[in-house]
Length: 274
Ligand SMILES: NC(=O)C1=CN([C@@H]2O[C@H](COP(=O)(O)OP(=O)(O)OC[C@H]3O[C@@H](n4cnc5c(N)ncnc54)[C@H](O)[C@@H]3O)[C@@H](O)[C@H]2O)C=CC1
Ligand SMILES: O=C(O)[C@@H]1CCC=N1
Image (cartoon, rainbow, N blue to C red):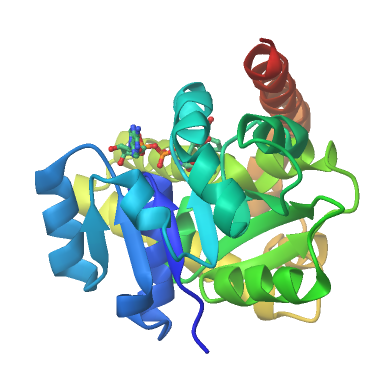
């Protein structure tokens, strides 16, 4: 039987996931999403065919899975609102909030619940997401399987055995799309500086990013080998790569991902404080 899935919060991340689920064939009538803005909800209902409401309690009533997808800063208030219904019905809880521990969520929801923490990313909207998942001890194998099935509808699923590893997942894939978008922006700007018309620079940069990612994913060779195959001895790529290495590109990624993981940890400390 199809599981009834309710999203609390219907913003960027939730709409990327349920939009991708519907695109992937999940029955839209089994999906409900809530939010604060009735007009935005009506547009989502129209676009994806899902049910929407501003009433969180009505939306959770009868749900098999409740996906918590509001901003971390308002999660406590939302959990308190849902606590009695969730305790009575005990759905599987899936939280996509950055930096909020499963134990904190369980506590805010009244205790002893099956909680999965998920760190997804927005390419879920086009079925190309990447999500890291952690299950607390109360999550059954069949619930893990259900979460895997729901999220695999929108991309790759990686389970982690230790919850703190979700900080690393956030740094690599949760926030990661923004790094690649930044690289696309920078490559486009650099192309324009070299004289290309703006629209050509954008098309070339985007198609190159797409082509490289598709090739890296499909190839039997690792990215480093694919890079070497573009790099002719004493050719043009060699100069560009040497320039990146001299300017410390790898260190930039190391620093940025450390900063990201540190922020995830800080959020978790800030938010779990009473
Ligand atoms: N945007 C991203 O790339 C990623 C976001 N996340 C997590 O997803 C969560 C949501 O982030 P976004 O979608 O980016 O935020 P957003 O601001 O786009 O969406 C938040 C949604 O919550 C709704 N909302 C606010 N108060 C509510 C309430 N009391 N009851 C029900 N709905 C309410 C708003 O109407 C809005 O639809 C955050 O916890 C974030 O950490 C996780 C991974 C990636
Ligand atoms: O920036 C954020 O806090 C969220 C979590 C990962 C991506 N966006």
